[in-house]
Length: 396
Image 1 (cartoon, rainbow, N blue to C red):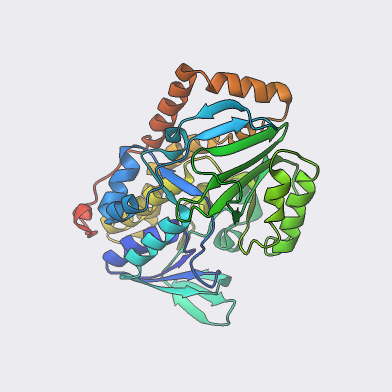
Image 2: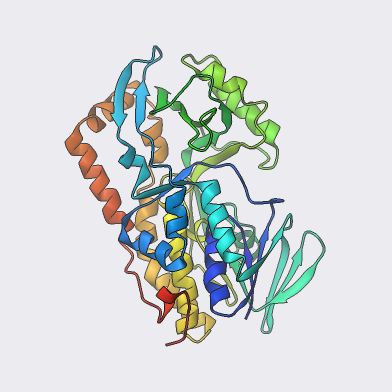
């Protein structure tokens, strides 16, 4: 089949790899002019996720660039330690920078798929013979299938699903991050500073110790802004953190020079059904939560299941899409429901901050949270699609 995949971050290259191995003609389109270099470290937890990475043939490459995770040390305005979370709390079994993950997936998948950067889907028209796609560049093509793997703000979802089929829920927080020079000389723990409803943090860049990465999380109702206007987003961050102490003024000084800024709401998306006749959603586009819901690992597993069900169903797309959703819907809903990252990172009240610090400074409660995260990561029952472990998808 001739397949178009929208999005070249994680889900897109993952499904392109599997579909290409199965012999399909796969094109990945990405609005960015090249692979994105920004983003945070992402982690994989549990046997299910690492097994899929191993079957993809990327596990060893990722282990070669793993960060090892950073402990998180929460401090007051004077730098005094309030609470410390060990590296395994955030890092899982395998933690890598998102940019490194995207690069590894791209390098492996481009052997089986072609990539078109700097373009995006402008319109979709589904009919009995395929899906007519017009791109922003003006190019027009017809495909047998279209996979929307283009994130929480999916263009494919917006074009192929009506508003009443999709629920986007703002979870009350925004997250931002950018790189700054490591003028603080950070070498170990990531430093985390809170006031009610706000978090500012900074940690060393494992690739370049002269650089540091920031993470800012703040409570806010829905904001009206242009997602492509970097200056407008920078202004929002400056306004939100104006007047705060600790190292916040110094970190904000690095914001104007930042060429890449991650800025987004912490939100959750629910789609009544993940597929139409020839269009299917994968990862955050169909069942995402922006931050803290194991979305990266779930997207990689989802790509494996989607491509495997297509192969096992003899490319009967309707049967494959139904089985794909049936296998994943319950487990991904559970991980979405567990996404409380905003309230955890930036409790809205001083009482909430104190309570969080006391609870997580207790090793028993911390171990219980780690066990819960491990359990959630293994909710999916991983199928074996024929000779998939050898890098081939075949119809059984």
